[in-house]
Each structure stands twice: as C-alpha cells, then as structure tokens.
Length: 232
Image (cartoon, rainbow, N blue to C red; front, side, top):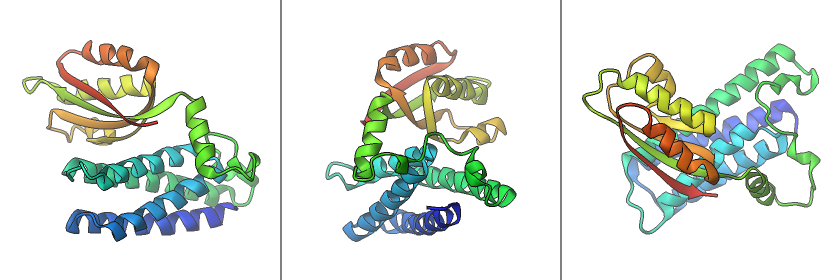
C-alpha cells in the first residue's frame, strides 16, 4: 500500500470512528453502532500493521480494548471511557497529520516520507499468509507489553499539582509507552489543569509494575496510584 492510499483509508475510517464516537456519547451503546466502530478500528489497525507504523497500532488497539469494555455485560458506561476514546482518536489524527506533512515535504522519495512516524519494519515483509491479528499479538508478546489503565491522584492541598502530574507522566514514559491520558500532557504543560486526578493508558512490561508504583509513590504529594491490566 502506498502512502497516499494509506492516508486516504485511515482518514476515512477515523472520520467515521469520530462520528460514531459522538453518537455513542449522545445515544449510548447499541450493537450496530459498536459493530461499526469495531470494523473501522480493526481496519485502521490492519493497514497500520502493513505499513509498520506501530504507534498507530498501539492507539487503535487501545480503542479496541475500550470498545470491548463497553460491550461487556458487566460494564456501566461512564464519561472517563468515552473521553479516553476521543483522546485516542485525537492522537491518531495527530499521527496521520504528521505523516501527511512529511509526505508532502518528501513527495515520492520512498519511505522517507514517513520516517519520523515508523517504529518497525513494514509487516507486509512478514509471512503474507499469517493473520494480521496473530502478527500483532505475537509482536506484543515478544515485546512483553500489556495495556494498562493507571489512575493517579495528587493531594488536593498540593501547591503545584501540574508539576507533580508531569513527574508521574515522565516516570510512566520512562517505563513503557504512554499512549493516552486525561488530562493530556500538553494541557498540564500549559498549566490549564486544576483537577488532582489523572487517568492514563500505557503499554508496560508486567515485570516493572511494582517498581513503577514505588517510583510514583516516591513523588511527593501522590496519594493514590492504581494500575489495572486491561489486556495483553
């Protein structure tokens, strides 16, 4: 798949995902809506596999995990899950925009047009008869990474809540792949954040979870850190 076709396909499916997310927020979940969203995000993940753009794969898989939670019979929809979906959509849009800008600059000069966005060899170089989902799960398994949800609470009487949150986010990034957060890191840097709670999605090695928790609690004024494994 060439870059132009890749961008066109991703833009179409992401636009439909964003529209479906608005419907989900407005009307609540129903089987047809969730099936449509699942189809769009699966397509995004598959084409990103084939281009080798792992960051988009991570983001798309995060969307899949949240959709699975919404589909589960024991799940009660809340604003956090819906808002995190839109954070993931926004991150995907940012990556696509970055690829588009690079492509416009470098034109048809091979894969240099997406060189700043690529994290692995294109997956079409692997076994063509192998299912994309198998390839992805094998990649994650070999990387020893699982998707985790992290809840952080800073003491309300802390004078510099943004500074403490940034320290927590940095600790997580040094331990794994932070893919989405509420509030977003850019908002914290601009000191547009007043709440003392944060929710984060990150790919982490299960072997470092205890060390990460200890590191986070060493940050002064952190009073809660809950890490939940969502999916492997």
